[in-house]
Amino acid sequence: MSPASQIRPQTLAVRELEVGGAEGPLAARLYKASADGRRDVLIVFFHGGGFVDGDLEQPDPFLRHLAEASGYPVVLSSSYTPATVKPFPAAVEDAHAVLLWAKKNRSKLGWTGKRMLVAGIEAGANLAAVCALMARDRGAPTLAGQILIMPMLDPGLSTCSMREMPSCPDEARVVDECAAAYRDYLPHPADRSHPYASPLQSSRLKNLPPALILSAEDDPLRDEAEAYGSKLIQFGVPTTVRRLQATRLQEPNARNECACQAHALSEIANFIAGLDEESPPESC
Image (cartoon, rainbow, N blue to C red; front, side):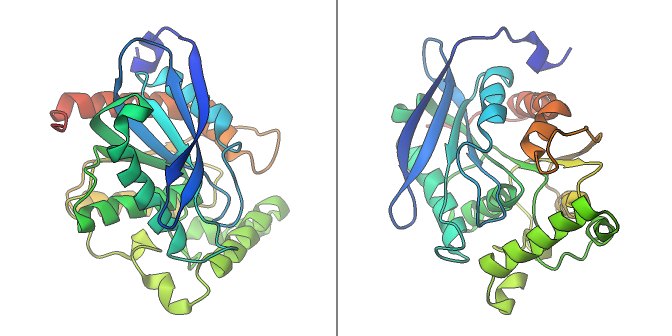
């Protein structure tokens, strides 16, 4: 029986708040199952939208389930500067600043400060992966893990799964959207090889937190997700890579629902439980 299935549902408290970004406040949303005391695990989550779109509403249904079904973590969903306002590295600087803000304001979040995980989907998963690099390089904050759901990691769109997509009109549109997103996010060609823009290109992947990487059978991002997982393993990073079965969607781009329906919650619950078993919590 998975950890997720052993947990009894509780009432979920959801509230809006502001967090500190690199250059000012950012809209955020906090999810916490009602129970006495503060939680040991905080998951900071960044939404998708190809760096140019997306908002806190996009992952809301998934994050409500996540806060209830993965050992009751506190889940902080944060916005970031879209590339249409300011391109790279504005979004990643925001994301790293949010992690630092969360560490400093743990009492406000109902979190003990013991374990922080960074997570995201698609473009948000790119930011999560980059935050793990930035936290290592800058010495803070300490991260217990990274959860990357169908991450965008290859601005060159060069993987086999991405190149196969134009044969299907709906999937070809996804490729076009990814290309357009990268044009806005990385308008300077030199930035496309920067490890903080394309973690898949990094040659420095040691000493990163354990990773859970979820791809999907029908997703054009699956090859780059799995390639990144392989590189992390080669560099000695404890990494779990799962390719989830394709799920029939009501809408072609409803990947948050896909992640939920394809058992991502159980994978995340198991990943968090494994972190608790493998390493002692960070001292406060």
